[in-house]
Image (cartoon, rainbow, N blue to C red; front, side, top):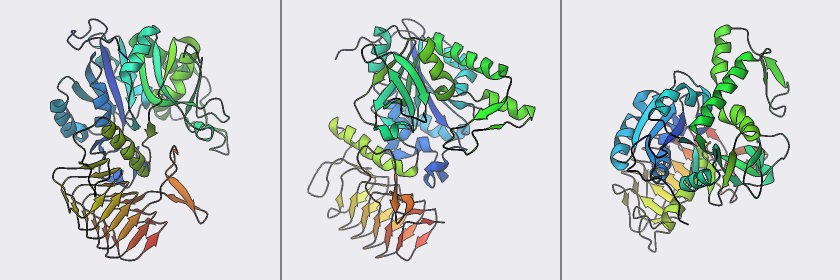
Length: 444
């Protein structure tokens, strides 16, 4: 399919320039990504050999009309400094800047707060990507739909099972024109199995007035009543504290999903691009494993030179960092990522797992459906394993003996598993030594 898209050599602000924004969140979020987020912010966690946010930038770099990318979040500026420096050399066509919110402003509030920086040079459109999404990011296809329909907004959507749909924002669209007719965030009853993928393309002339309207509506609302889904809270609502500062702060939190998209469906030229390719949220620490598999499979389909050459002991796709040491008798794959300076001993077996930098897996150990944290040790003949989840499932928890446990086993930073020890369906916090068999536990 040939896509008519602007060329990168057009000067900024001329010929319909496009910018991109990646929403990276902040330190008070990411609790579901623990224990991994205790040591690295989720957007910088390595999946398929690269930080999660790197996969977003790779897709953005393929859109010729984009020259500027903003990362918006409320991590300290130092958090992304090294990554941005490395990305500048890897993506020379992109100017990448981090804009720090003074507090959590919501997915739309951050855009509006930094509107002057985003609108500098008068771009016609902005892509907005949530960093915790794993997909093929068909941005050029979204841009073509945007131009073909003379749209004000395009949202990336995908189909999921009807059971899973209510956990996401649901889109009702016209099957022929692809226009979004209705949007509801996490509906209580089934309305559609077409869900929001967390990737958007907005006209700058549509999105910022829409956010301004939402802020004004929030400020003008006479009753300070906050509603929650009744299924999540026995009381359907509660009155917000009268503290003016607290109220002002809450008024500033504006979210695309809850506050903007529903109104856009009613009043704007709003369309959905439905991807048939893979899509996955990276919310919990365990969800890094299916995301790792999806990105590795994509790299394999694209004949990426980064992947290890298949052999009798390498079942593709496998990523091995050049500084890692893997014994020729160790068997790896499929869907395995081996980080920098990792050592894999003779006869070891690693499958559907991520082994992070400076870790060691000793001889004849077995690691399945697991994440081995930085500088951790798995002893000889030890077995560290999780449980595979069904293909297409958007959950990484399972029920064992009537108790919900993590399907993926996760060892935090500098954990040790003794020789011949078995660890199954456990989450182990950093700096723990496991000297006995454990199953279905969170090891504090």
